[in-house]
Image (cartoon, rainbow, N blue to C red):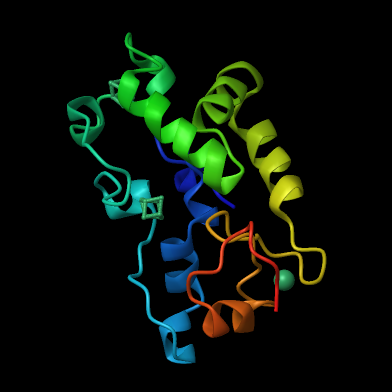
Length: 150
Ligand code: SF4
Ligand code: SF4
Ligand SMILES: [Zn+2]
């Protein structure tokens, strides 16, 4: 996990299914998803996160907490969706980065998302390690946290 994988909105792109698919080139394994290098590396806003923000699109803030409107309505609704479905809160992440610094945040993230079997990061969109448990996703591409593994 690297600093440039932490997006301005507080998302950790290293946990994202589109990022991990690209990183491990998983389309070769017979299950298809778009590849994304992460918000900062790709140089534009995430296309999977709804409406665009002009400040972010123009690169005027590195993190949303630098913005006078933080946390804006758009970020709150994104945060709610991720808290409910994907076990993370962008706003909580941003507040942690703001008070504790990015290195402490990365250390916390490595610990929180670490696969017990291989040490790589679990994917937040399905709760699976895409190295150890990819077969679960191959059998059920819609698999998400709340479903039982088969
Ligand atoms: S799709 Fe969005 S959240 Fe996922 S890696 Fe790309 S920019 Fe990050
Ligand atoms: S308006 Fe501010 S808080 Fe909202 S997404 Fe844009 S930069 Fe982030
Ligand atoms: Zn693993």
